[in-house]
Amino acid sequence: MKKIKILLVDDEPDILEFLSYNLIKEGYEVFTASNGMEGVKKAKIEKPDLILLDIMMPEMDGIEACAEIRKIDSLKKTLIVFLTARTEEFSQLAGYEAGADDYITKPVKPKVLMSKIKALLRLKSTDEKQQFIELEDFIIDRETYKVTFQNEEFMLPRKEFELLALLASNPKRVFKRDEILEKVWGNEVVVGGRTIDVHIRKLREKFGNDKLSTIKGVGYKLNA
Image 1 (cartoon, rainbow, N blue to C red):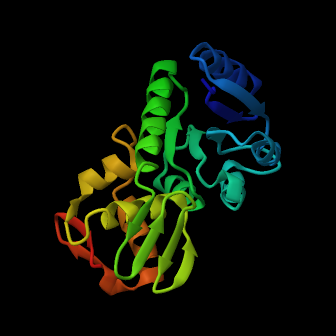
Image 2 (tube, rainbow, N blue to C red):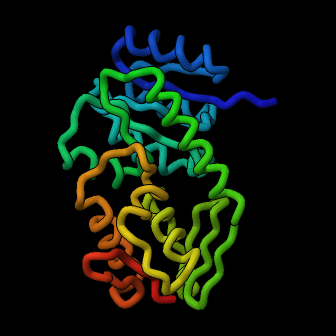
């Protein structure tokens, strides 16, 4: 059975050693990099299934590295999780806008880390089973992360894509905010209350206000 590849990117050698030890013990194939620039280069070569990425690093910080990785076609499906001691909402929003899938705060607890990784890999596997969603105005391709809207192609950041795909999986159904957080961000992640709103706003900017409805105090639905 093919091993899951994980790339660790952090400028602290002790953290790289500690996390590598625990991940290898769980059976993962592990690669490491000590800054964002090196991390991007190694990601291109190794094509990991998941990247654990520190935010505060020399040469290129984690948010810049994440944005660069998301531009690489062969890494569109790679999961990216930030490791950070920073809990300010602005840094989380910046990370999600760059294409991150989740956050884990330092100091990292091995059991929490392994649980998070397994949950994200399960979610990714489930998402990939339904490759296409075809609606009147939308064609959503989970394999390539492309969205075709009224015959125009869009490449969305991962969380925008997953949010749109969730809403499109059952058009006109109202998805509650708690359900969206659980299915798109995972039930273990703690995000600010504005996170969903920011992503909905970005989808409206691309596809029009009339395509996404807000049900006040409940959640959102796709009009398609």
